[in-house]
Image (tube, rainbow, N blue to C red):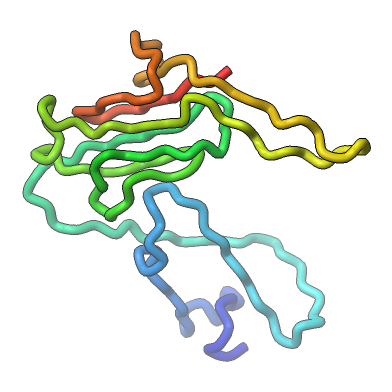
Length: 170
C-alpha cells in the first residue's frame, strides 16, 4: 500500500499515518461519522478480522466552567431541536438529539437557553404494498429532566444548568 490509502496492516501501521482531527469535520460531541476504507485494486477480496478507530480527545484551554446540555426525545423521532443561544461550537440546534457545551457565565436564571421542539410532529409517509401509508402524527406532552418528569407541558424548556432533557411525545 502507499500513502494514498487509509488502512494499513499491523506491520505498516507504525510507518504510515493518515490522521485527521474530527474537529476539522466540525461534528458536535457524540456525532455520527462515516469511516470509509478503500483498497487497491478495487476488485480485491478483503476479510476484516478487526477494525479499530482511535479517537483522540481534543480540548481547549478554558478559564470557566462549562454547562453540558443534552436534548432528545422519547421516541427517537427526527424532530428539529432549536436553542435560543449558540453553544461553544456555534450550533443552535439539531435533529433527533442535540448535545452542547455552554459557558457557565453565559447561562444564568435571568438568561436561560430556551430549547424548542415542535408541538406536533408528522413522520414521513412510509411506502407499503398499497402505496404510501398514512402519516403518523405525534403530539408533545411534556419533558423529563435527568430522567424525572417535570411540570412543563409546553414545547419549550428553559435551561440554566447542566442536564439531560427528553421531550416526550405520544
